[in-house]
Image (cartoon, rainbow, N blue to C red; front, side):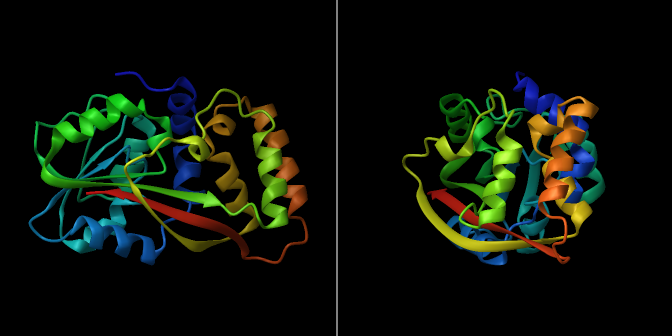
Length: 237
């Protein structure tokens, strides 16, 4: 199994910051994908590249039979602590460790941009039962808000060769969006920044420099600091 080295090192080292700092997903977005994919009791759902289970735990109340796949050991450990009732397997999107036609739906939250698109979609189609559906979900920071745009400039200055979800090819999917706000303390915002893969993979000195710039940017902001997102749900049935 092959995983982008920045993702592997960054998400392994930053799993705790990811769990603390990354947002959940808005109720409206979850309701939308549940409706489109017709999720409920008797349906088996794969959360692919599940991370720490931010999306998985929101699907538990639907009564579906959930299984998760995640390639990074640190993320799997955080997932097991956060979502103890759901099995999580080691695997990648390009080599899903499940039999053919074994799930009714596949959900991918904040991860599809890391995949080899064609190989991953072929694997998704392999494990889906006839009539199965797929949902790809992203929380995108709303950079129409000036301070968020400035924070993104600080974060992106040394991002390296990391896949960008703004440029993912997702033809054949229907797009739906909503607004979402993540309320954060000052330290929570720094955890949010530190959870970015290429920042988590930096050496301590370099990462501290980026976090210091973000800290200075929001100095004087009243807590909780509202971090706005546009949540996108792309579905295919």
